[in-house]
Length: 161
Ligand SMILES: [Fe+2]
Ligand SMILES: [Fe+2]
Image (tube, rainbow, N blue to C red; front, side, top):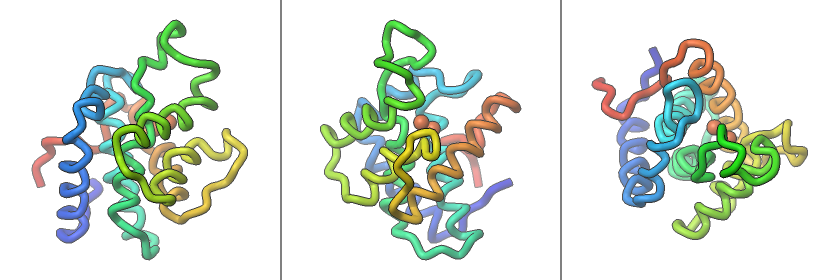
């Protein structure tokens, strides 16, 4: 069971609250990511695991950027299972779409932009520039694997401590 320190958990919830103010972010709950897991549940899990991972490897990170970037990394706003709704090859194009959507609704710093646009690396060729982007890339792959194999989210929004 992954568990954040009290201070990281407070930071996580603060960032989550800020990003969830956007109705479009909340609309990710209507899109399926893997199995029965929505894109919103997936993104929240990736944010939680990214922060947990930063504690484990003892990397100094900008926690707010890490969590916000992770929460918005899949903000592409369509059902990627439906060919009619997606543009090009989803695996390659969705990081850019997510960034465009996020930039329209939030003021993002360079680190948050890098997290979103590089999270599919090495599938997309340009490597991450920040350690926060590396962590989100790893957490994304881990969560995707768990969601696909075990068919449940790594972290649930109303999870009790
Ligand atoms: Fe993605
Ligand atoms: Fe993802």
